[in-house]
Length: 212
Image 1: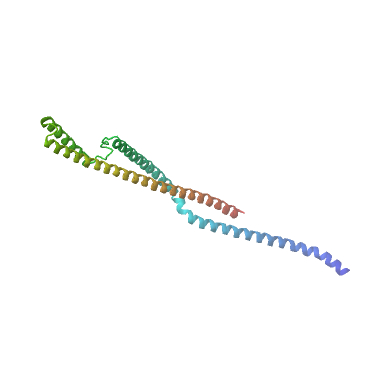
Image 2 (image 1 turned 90 degrees about the vertical axis):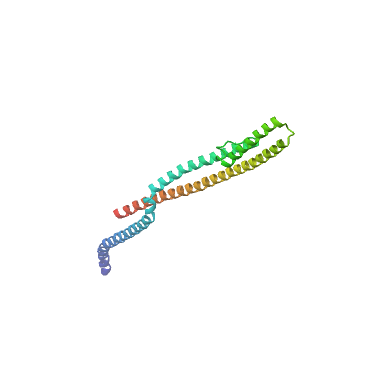
């Protein structure tokens, strides 16, 4: 019993001495864990900063590139619309039996030359009819000559319209390609902003862990 009493009296003292040591050990372990976590966060932040350094540094450049591309897209879209309008006018003129405007045909020198030839052939025929009458052999030859010029003119007009169609297709392709580039740059810009936000969050966490 006496020995038990000694143990009972001694135990609280031992426990009292052990408790501060255990507390200090727990706090040390906790600080070590926090330091390890802070180190891990700082390392991850550093790695992420390296990965996002270029997007961050190039954010302004990307925005300027995007503005430039949007300006180009407006110009290309206007060009495409102009080509489509030109094609529509030319088609309507041909369908009505008229000659499309020279500007719509791209100021084609061949068309203008054929128009001049047609005008000369028509005037020569009219003069011959007025002098010699409808049945004169020269009149028939002039009629054939006029028909040949008109046939060449119609073929050239059809070719000119086909050229406009090619221009329209090229303008549409250029617009589509530029739209894809704009969309890709917009996506890249959004991703860069997302990485910047993520980096700021990690940096805040690292600062908080360091200050504990």
